[in-house]
Length: 354
Image (tube, rainbow, N blue to C red):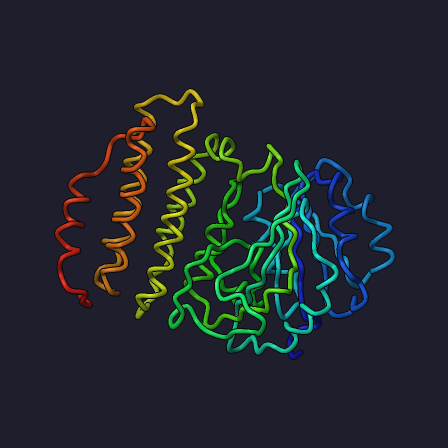
């Protein structure tokens, strides 16, 4: 493993997670403890997390590593992690989730085999665990099969969703991702979007390799729609950050459509959050909608001279359709009709590089 002392770096961002962090650490199989590291990055907790995990650090001193920094939310933890990881591959584990220890060694075997100079993104299926009902559901990615599948976003029509629960990233790709905004939630969307933009090659592991156990059902989770509603301004900041990312020249239509779908999903969540009756005035929600349209418009028009225009026309058209479907159900009722009209006019033209 040239330039890497470990096969895998697991990043665990933690903030006042005393109730869950021991269970997360206990979920690993430490049989191959020399081949991976757990970088537990304390984002300014008020609790004494280091003292809590000290016994486990004593048992696995070269595997479990503790770092403490000033509070800055998830994005700042990822920025910090770039300076301390030593693995060939990187995976993020939330402090209230678990690893499926039964498949962990097989997972390490696959990662050791993959050439990270040619393939820098690995997909694995994961388990969704509802902590309220205690029910488990296996979440398979598209192309999940019995063998490893190699490809790229340029030659594969990937129609699945993205989340860090299913992704393992090469150290080189992880370190090349843009510095994330600090002090806000939902910056994982920027990380994933940038990974889709920059990835050279993907590997889909066999569907029976289940690594991540994603616990859902906690009302305090940031992805809860009521919490998104409270932080819609932060969601918009994240969209703006995505819009400001550098252009990738010669991007293919398949990859561009994938990026478009990712943004459409973000807008969809934002619209759903806008439907939550949280006391926000109708005028304020109209202003938010205009801001969303402006961001999407910028994504389209700022790039029309560099790449195929059609995927970005699809992006803005589908996002507006999503918004239009909500008109009768929400105070979101202002659409940039001039922009919609221009899209309708352009979509009838043949695809071309301008």
